[in-house]
Image 1 (cartoon, protein in one colour):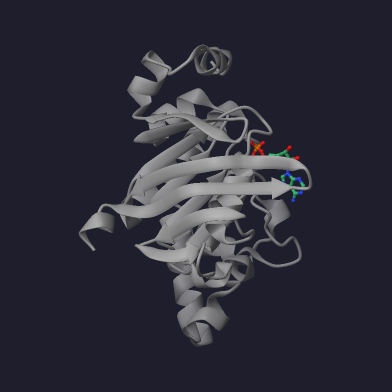
Image 2 (tube, rainbow, N blue to C red):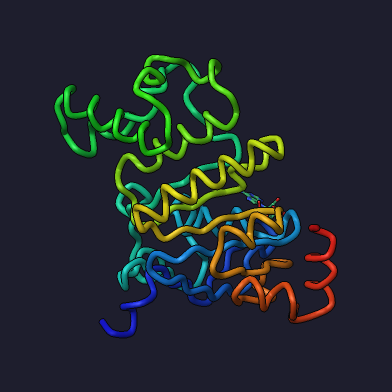
Length: 248
Ligand code: ADP
């Protein structure tokens, strides 16, 4: 389909209401294959809800979401585990009672039916991908730094070789130095694997350095979408300019 050849993810006219509040008011967003989009915007503007819809944790009320030209929400419904989409949240949400290796392998056995040996090899490969040596597999999450935990969360999300990765403020709990280092490590992993990525962030520098497309969300709408330079130098309206100014 020539129409969808360049767009890996297409969101058209998506709305979502919780109770009486319309949280998403007609979202249109197309993301190129292998592209990186940063979604920025004030708290409560609907960023996380949009990610959850793409992941398949929630269904839109109206509108359509397509992955690889295939409708996953709209006329048909494809559940989260069949979407090949990875998700990393702010706190990584590792299982505290499992080792790092078990955390990474979670979902691998069922999905791939591999032997124990194959799974162990894949865990080591994933640790290597996030620049941690194999000895980390035996540790528990609480024995790791925040940055290491986020890299493990990424490794776990990469285990099933997702085509699309959703990152919901994954670095915001880290202190400044670690944030930059972790962001660089994560960006490298995703770029190398050619994964189409959407990053929700409050951090303007992060959006600029990470993304080739920035989408500004406000009050359930996308106020502006464009390349980072254009969005930051020529904000579409005053509210966007003020928000981006505040975010510095
Ligand atoms: P952001 O990520 O931009 O901070 P969210 O998508 O988390 O925004 O939330 C947008 C609005 O939707 C908020 O007012 C939030 O309270 C509301 N909301 C999100 N999820 C739910 C839910 N499951 N039930 C009810 N309200 C929700």
